Amino acid sequence: MFSMQKIKGLPNGISDFKVLREKNYYYIDKTSLIEELQQEIGKTILFTRPRRFGKTLNMSMLQYFWDIQHAEENRTLFQGLYIESSPYFSEQGKYPVIFLSLKDLKERTWEGCQKAMKKLLSDLYDKHQFLREFLNPRDLKYFDRIWMEEKEANYSGVLKDLAKYLFQYYQKKVIILIDEYDTPMVSSYEHGYYEEAIAFFRNFYSAALKDNEYLQTGLMTGILRVAKEGIFSGLNNLVVYSILDEKYSSYFGLTEEEVEEALQYYEMEYKLQDVKEWYDGYRFGNTEIYNPWSILNYISNKKLDAYWIHTSNNFLVYDLLEKANINIFDDLQKVFQGKEIQKTIEYSFPFQDMTNPQEIWQLLVHSGYLKTEKSLDNHRYALKIPNQEIQSFFEKSFLNRFLGGVDMFGEMITALKKGKIEIFEKKLQDILLTKVSYHDVGQEEKYYHNLVLGMILSMSKEYEIHSNLESGYGRYDISLEPKDKMKSGFILELKVAKSEEELEKKAKEALQQIEDKKYDIEMKERGIQEIIPLGISFYGKKIQVLKSVKKAV
Image 1: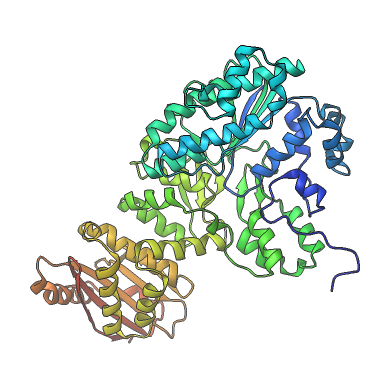
Image 2: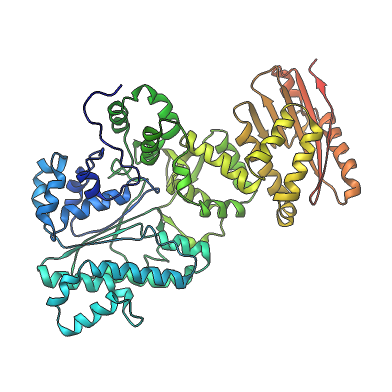
């Protein structure tokens, strides 16, 4: 039971630092970030981190710390926090600040994006309308065009112009904070207006952050660093701190010590090991990091569940998976089984090269779906799935997206495990008919690998699953070896028929191949009592499944 002391509320979904502090929500002190950033005043910095790892809250904190407009009022927000005792606290309230968040700019069309951007910039100017009475007639005209969302306004130069006005008013250079700068680029790529968006935002960011004589410091956050040939082609003064860098590694996300303190505060410390398995596992630089969004929701709901994965539509991940080739699926298979893979990971993410399925590793790491287990050399890293939450994401999302959904695929797998091969065949046939396009089945290897990956994700707790491994006198397609040796094992051989009439013949050939090449030999040697060979033949969306049962001698 809790003591009589009033327990602080959890700041679920609260990213406004002032609200969090004034309402006395539980806050994990990250104000030492201010101290470190004060030593980099004059630079333009980009922080890239996965979504929901505290980027917006940190940017809000910086805004309230530096903002000259409400300096005295904001000073109280930092009482009792680390920065209050720092010599850098003297910098509180010393700068005009422009804060712009693009986290909600997720429009479906370029016209919609333009409209939403105009409204966002108009609202920004509205917060600074006190400047109007001090502007000369020429600048007032330009200010009002943005304020009133006029068509002929110079929207690409908005931030630089506002910085000029603030500099003239305060006689101090300006700090520009841009949160989730890459959100409109991701949406533009998803909805087919990337070229229009990149042309605008390249000029928008360059005007604000490059050769801006009114700029003291520029800070941006995002998930990805869009490659130089895109948005940063004109921004050669940019310093990037990504999840691969040690510096600033503990400021986004929660350290183990911070999680332990939170669990202890809410009297849930006895669940630490479970929490670790579900939400730990991220590595930023050399720092072990927990997912803060999931931790907050876990404490709030007192239930281990997948919270973070539902905060995005995961379009980019799905898009690259759909383009993936056989090599990608071989690596995904290893990852889904908890193994390491080694890949080269760079700082930049090239939207222009999204047709290259190898870019999936860049995306999965920077977006938080894979972790860097360890650094090797020449930008190569050992990669793994970080925790149970992400494993569950891949399981549910992959099955929903590619294999008919969790329920349909689950019914098929249940039938297989029970040896009800007729039902297994029917359920697989249903998936083919209802959820797989002719385009997919035309790429036989890819579809078969989807099937294997689905099995790995849904059956990995009970079975060791392998594909294209040597056994006996050849390589089988798929083997399912039960961890409980009293359960049945399965060997699946897949064939493609040239006609519907040839389905049965090909299924029999597959069974015969399993027999002739003794694919079951290794499973027998490891003590599996019953092994069920399955010959599966495909023709378009038609299938045939035949089985034979072999008892281990």
